[in-house]
Image 1 (cartoon, rainbow, N blue to C red):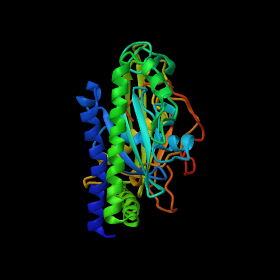
Image 2: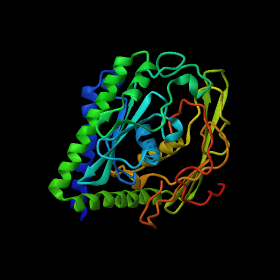
Image 3: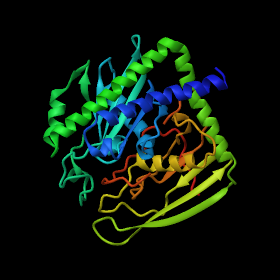
Length: 360
């Protein structure tokens, strides 16, 4: 493995996610997917670490790893032909219309990769059509789908499909868009198996891991050139849909060497309207801001994602602190935009691997 082969495999993995997205776009029925392009696709390894993503919706891609982890935790062990569906915001989702599918990809008889797609479906029920009801709790926004198998051993779970269609004002369109997502996953399986056959399974896995190391090193370099110090910025949202008032959002960023600590202390408590952000969204927005600082083309994978530790505080951001250290000390890495949901709090957060962040 060298710099040239890493670059080649970076584009090979990315091309799988890009072709997934093109398949989904062309096969879909909803204008949300076909015309607005409100969807995202990514490839993960068997441990739910993101390897590559297409240039789709940043907030989807930064939060999707949590959904893949939740899918594995709830539905493992997986076998060929399984597909998991979910949209729960507290399991890595965004808002309820964004439905995620996760499917395993086996090389031989071994689970080696996972394909994931997230698409904005036009209607998933709720108190009013569309995706922005005047809701004050999550249950008013539509059907909440925990991780369940939409397809098992290659056979559709008709009970789940009927449940989703029955709870939508446009059932035929929902089923058609789900079939488009399934088609995208089929393409991902075909392409990754073909890559393993062409380059060898060992080489494919080696470069998948190497790209994560490379991305982490590049992200450390991006943070390393920033001046050490403490930086603070505050802004405000103008109302939550239930009333007109300022909702402060405060971020304090502490940079020390190649580590970054982002603290949302001072941000407003959670509000009655549907503007609260779950942890996956706060993490996703923070990651994307760091990504924008990179001048070079950093591979977007698990290596550049933040490791987080949250504090027991309910707020409009739903997470008090995110620390990005980017250390590669062990063989295993652990694991923004306003989320339209009624925020809950969980402590400790899933995947926390760092000690509690110091106050800035």
